[in-house]
Length: 549
Image (cartoon, rainbow, N blue to C red):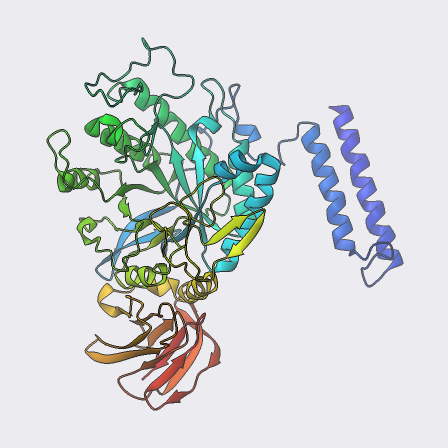
């Protein structure tokens, strides 16, 4: 302890000497050695002290340290519970609230695990950092992180290093966070955890299906429920301590549990047991020290299948009806620009399109359609590395981020042979959406309308909103696909709009004023003005506009 105190005193004295030296030599605050400021040098000295503290066992540099017990488990007894997000009803519409404010579900998936497998940890971390910056620059404010139970717990000890690294990267780029949790079931992959080898303690499910040869945990047994719910509570405890800005919005409890791709059958061959487990995991989240929205994503396949006596609609209803599953939504990978997922609109459920590929041309129309329907999007994903589905916003090849430019998708996937989206067009749309996200998250669906969501390259699309006629005109016969737009009526009576490419909106009457900018905390922040030709206004991509009639 005496040595520790001496080290701190010496480090502090060194920092003070550095500060006084540079302050005396350069009143302007710039060092004559390397051009760094006094503040930079003093900050560096403070970091040296912090590093010394960490080496000597000081817990200030690691907020988790004072809560960690012998097996790495977090002691939650001294933590103050926090409710970060919930489903609320506003303007007759079910919406998300995050830290008390409307939240637009507009998120990008990014899988560190794939990067680590393909490139190794050092390079993967570098790519992760670059990717987070790409997400931030795109106008999307939320990253979806993939967290695997097996990476956090080995059957004896907890280790949160992987979580820390991913959180540090997201925080550095000021992104909100959603968690995709991977437990027993990921598209029919997974099954037993690596430490669950004793079949007397961890029994296998007895099934009569010759096509399924893998051992599957019997999820009716309490031990499987207890172990995963404990892991979920530890995840929430980590977030309570480490996420000081309360930027974590939601946690997905399993990934496509109804997908049997991994060879263990849909719902791990046990629908009722799987749904019960999901609800218990949701209950653990809601009762944890970091309560947030829970979600489950499902495929839209299996309509003609009966499982445990239930058809597809009945199965979906049973999942939605679970009291601790806040959001149940589908994922669809095709180029139809209109995905009617209103079937999921039951009770307080918000049918977000939880996975939608941003690589094909259709993603722009899909996005505008879902926004105007009051839904959100989870784009899967930023880029693909070790996978062949080629659904990413960027192509990632030879350590390069390659923007898509409208050529054909060649990978063997649902999108093979389809035209790519243009990455720049997607980013422009995202910036427009970001400028209006508070309104898009909360205004009544009846006060929004999308135009030309089918992406025709020549169109004059007339729609009614608030009893008034609006027309969207786009004319580019040489284009491979067209553009689309959206108009919504704000609480102030003004009309807010954007277009994904340069196009014309004709309003019901000549606007008194048209400005562009962004809407935040109930206030329109004007950045410039736009001219009108009578009732017609030309909108540029990447901007959001406000028209007062």
